[in-house]
Image 1 (tube, rainbow, N blue to C red):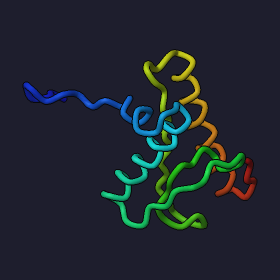
Image 2 (image 1 turned 120 degrees about the vertical axis):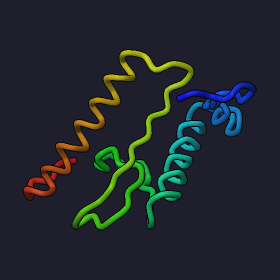
Image 3 (image 1 turned 180 degrees about the vertical axis):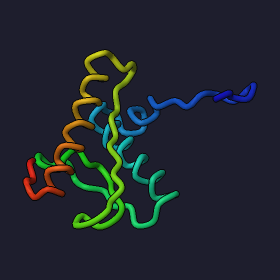
Image 4 (image 1 turned 90 degrees about the horizontal axis):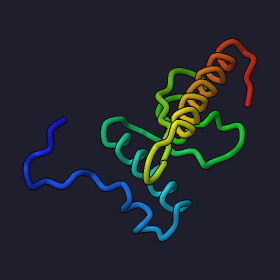
Length: 108
């Protein structure tokens, strides 16, 4: 995607600047992702971080039926190979958990 001349790129570091910490930046980024999702999808709800939440940060729909899920990962200042693996593992875990829920063998 091209950026017009004179338009600065998105600076995700602003999340840490705004909150004063890396942990605060992650929470701020997660909130931004949910707000962006809500701008295009009705009734988006955030889920508080909790073991067993399948890595779901926000969702729209009915947990007993069809849902759309958003996961957010905030790695600054770079995304390393290890981070990329964490992203793949998180997505895989969420998909396996959802498949287990559909078949009646829910896992956390």
